[in-house]
Image (cartoon, rainbow, N blue to C red):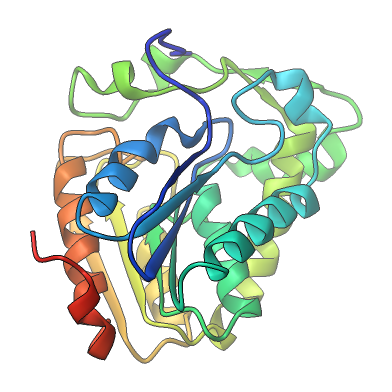
Length: 263
């Protein structure tokens, strides 16, 4: 699995204006995949935090010992840090990060909006449902990045940092969170932007549509990317994701919109 030495797995924080954005990475990944989007938003006046979920950006063995409650606690802590600086808060996440974004949305009514990138509410791998039992018999599942990649941009793997093995215990935690989010979707009311790639082989083809139809948000937008795989923040249309996300945020700022610098 790609772990290019030039990529940092560190969390990041870009101090800016009164509009805050929390970015949450995906399963077995790191803040690496969120950083370019964070830099883009920070350059336009937002205060941006990229959290590193416990067990990520280190070793698969450490990830195997973590729980969804620890991931949630890390997101809550970073959200509190942003809240101390910013009166207006948005949250966005990729895949597992989108599930955690939805969890935060269900527990914080004051969030100004949720950006759900390739939301892992439904996955293609049928084995996922057996992870709560399999975790007691199988520790890890190998991942072949080249064989499994659905990314169209040939240079995309050079922008990815993630493990070359998947801890089954941690996958079971993702599954439990996924099930909770599916039930919670109707009571999540914040404005929501949902984006998925048509080439995504990790999620079911209707994952984004399912999210769009079930979420309780009156203000919801669904965007499909025709030439992107699962990790839409490293594939060829990544800049379109940043631009559309920023435009969507600006449209929902109301009076606070004046605080964001026009690019």
